[in-house]
Image (cartoon, rainbow, N blue to C red; front, side, top):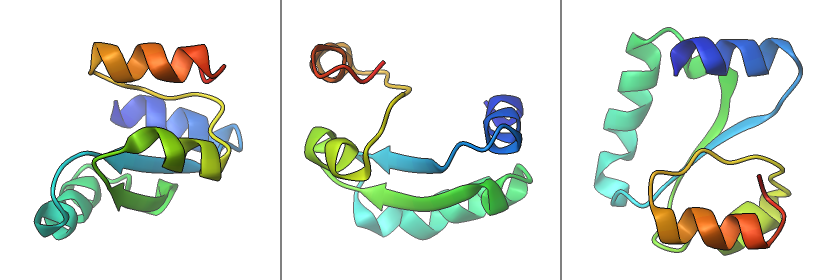
Length: 80
């Protein structure tokens, strides 16, 4: 995933991480991104249970999602 993040950033994409993980792990997520050498490529890390409204608000055009139901809902909204 680190390679994909670097590549998308180089192509001019603005990258956000939207996670359902609790806010207490926000710093651990930033630390992990830093350890992977990609923290500087991520605009912001968002912790929220309801990803879809935030993805719409941010104007997401593409999304990587591991939850099938969330992925289907995003796809139905035209977010690939």
